[in-house]
Length: 379
Length: 97
Image 1: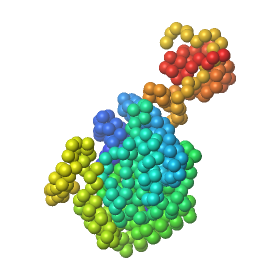
Image 2 (image 1 turned 90 degrees about the vertical axis):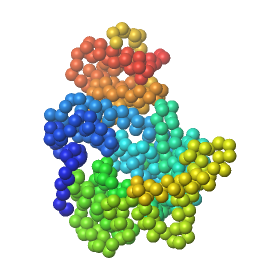
Image 3 (image 1 turned 45 degrees about the vertical axis):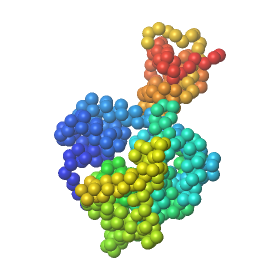
Image 4 (image 1 turned 120 degrees about the horizontal axis):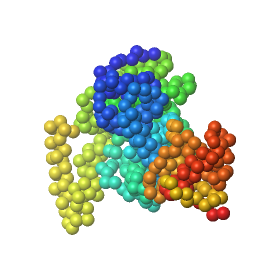
């Protein structure tokens, strides 16, 4: 077992204590009702904190408990709409013969959380084979989805976003990925066939729903904050790791360690477990930690993503290092010259007469603006 | 609600286009026609399960009295109020006999 390290943030510590099932005294948090309710919403923890306070909210202000309960109930309503729509989208893909895997928040909500509304998210992430990405888009557009202006690209983002507003006014966003990451170093961590082989059915999302299996889902949950969010800590992501680890069998743990080491993400996974231990007291087998420690000592390239203060340029450099020369040039081209469709929409001149004639100026403006942001540390 | 609107012997059932999800100690209902959600707790949640098929007030009253320690007359009066409210909010319908 790893020792837990304290953290100086009182509100975050209070939220973590409630997630651990411990009593957190309201006066000890030294915060206002507004700040607490806002922190729960901002960290996507409202439902989980509602559960904790329903079990033991002695001494807590009734107003705070009531507001949290109201918001948690509203999330249940939204979740019902989301679930219905996800089933609809998956049925459209299945009817078009496009296999898809659900991953990230939606998958976890329906596989490891006690109720799906306890894992709020803004979108549903789907993984398809690279060869199926156009068929997936056609099928989803046929189901009423429309494309969001997105700076896409074969090497850059490996995903597109589609949205649909349902009759209740709820906007449903689908992120369709054909690679697992926007970062080249991680994009080929797993291919679709490998993930599909280990996938599990999700009956709550219909007959066609399959999600990443536990081992792959945990690997993704460990890597995700470093890979896409500059190693930002959010308690809901730590809780994802906490819930996933609780379901692993002895053999699952060994397969997890084998995979993390083989994929050269042992240091990142070790870091994610330390967070889960510090925050939530997550039990992690000692032999697994020793194996990850030994592998992490070999200085994996991915460990660079754990460094603090990383910026856009660092991520671009990491991606360039992970690519072959031909793909490096392609990535630079995609960063510097996104698709004309994206540029016209981004500058609000889609459909404007002679809009395409403006493209050279738009590219030049984008280039100077981006360079300025990088030089001034804003990117 | 104070006026009695349910016809004698009426059969009540949950309306179509209502989604329900058990969450903690309550049942959250979402009306798919207008997007309004409601929370039902305790006996009300049990009554919701009893009107998944058309049932008369007497049917429901008998089931509740058998399960809970409650006076039948008091139960029937409260039950009628709840059912009327469910009908008024479009969550339940008076089923054609």
